Image 1 (cartoon, rainbow, N blue to C red):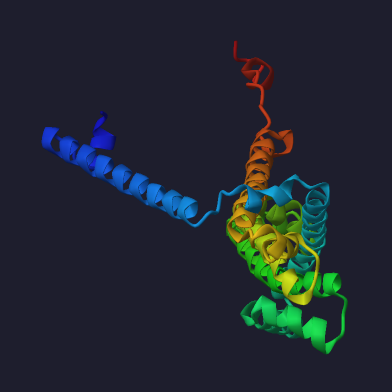
Image 2 (cartoon, rainbow, N blue to C red):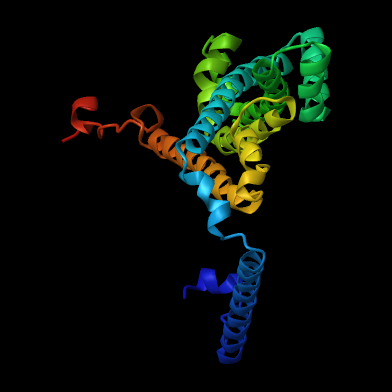
Amino acid sequence: MTATSSALYDIPGPRTRKRHFLYGTLSTLIVLALVGRLLYLLFDTGQFTSAKWTPFEYEGIQELLLRGLGNTLKAFAYAAVLSLALGALLATGRLSDHRPLRRLATLLVEFFRAMPVLVMIFFIFVALKVQPLPALVAGLTLYNGSVLAEVFRAGVNSVERGQREAAYSLGMRKTQVMAYVLVPQGVRAMLPAIISQLVVALKDTSLGFLITYEEFLHAGKLIASNLDYDLPFIPVVMVISPIYIGMCMLLSWFAQWVAKREKRSPKTEAVEVAPADVGRLLPGVR
């Protein structure tokens, strides 16, 4: 234990270690008891009977789930791309030197960020009579784009002011400063928040079943409400939930991969400078 690390907290003694072990053991037993109770309730209510799990063996049910998953990924892909584009556009407006443009962008960001995404989806679907997929994508784009606009703005503003001033002193225009100096350096600060918001967009695609869009949750709802299979609600949840969790984990893994790749990129690494030859610079020195 170094002096620096020991200064942050007291080294636990024998009694403290024993108490920590007791707390850890007690917490583990409580968690195991809760899991055991949950499993008991599931078995007691017949959630693992063959009648409830039989539908997943049929090819038609599997195709229904795969089609719903494909529709979910399609809606997410559209919403993600459009949200990033809208977020960049609104962030540019918020960072503009022109006051009217800046105020307009601020008004749009605050309005769409404050509106519940479900209300926007319903309004577009019912009032504007838009088809389910465009209505879902539009609602997700407006909400997530406004949130991402603040993420982009905060990422650009997180770059040290000296970087901006140095770029302007070299005669660069504002567009060049944003494109070549501020945005590349702000990406690292933005990336975790961007991926987090994309995860929100992925989960919010499940709202599509409320406007009859045949996405993944809608397919699960059709199966769970089938009387022929004894209403397999819990089995459907146990099948669909891990897939949603897996997709969110893939997004997080992708963010980590991009961050590591960016660190290894030659564009973000300092160029090694060879030591100067003093003899050549100063001929009289040997």
